[in-house]
Amino acid sequence: MRTLDSEAAFDLAVELATSGERRILGICGAPAAGKSTFAEQLAERLTKAGHGVALVPMDGYHLAQSVLEELGLAAVKGAPHTFDGDGFVALLKRLKEAPTEQIWAPRFDRGLEDSIAASIGVAPDVSLVVTEGNYLLLDEMPWATIRTVLDQCWYVEVPEELRHQRLEARHMQFGRTQAEAHERTFGSDERNAQLIAATAKSADAIVELS
Image 1 (tube, rainbow, N blue to C red):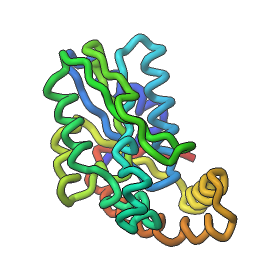
Image 2 (image 1 turned 60 degrees about the vertical axis):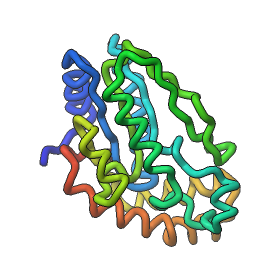
Image 3 (image 1 turned 180 degrees about the vertical axis):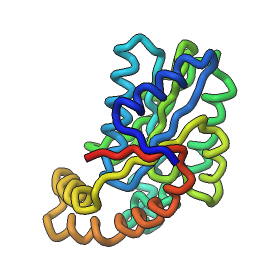
């Protein structure tokens, strides 16, 4: 398995974007590994370079907060069963199989802690869709189908201490106390992180971020 730095990742993404047909690149990693920021920066740089790129994160398929509370799942939000995995798979298939259609995808709003439907447009001139999320490489249904749709999937890694620090800070930024943030980081989030880390072996490349 190859290891990519930012420049090598950009060059490989350019190859995908200029292949002559729509490609889908997945960016996977544990919570607070930096995959969202990396995906955003990569998509922005590709766009500035003149390539047709759309960023479609998996987080848009979080179950609504009200649904999670109704089902008693709010405390484990972020686990695989707190997403509409089938819906996300269906979107990726449509993005790949219907490149001439204007397609709309949902976006997760961290301020609202909920998704907003039809917020991300993917036009027919998009040659590369970048999607990022925790479970792109998970080997259980419906997630396992995703790997068959992606042309490439990269796994983002950072030192665990840094990832934990980022995650605690994120939880506090959105209203949790320090104790609550610590409990969430080393509780349900850590269980999810271990599940995700076990999928790294299925990636096409590892992206190492400092």
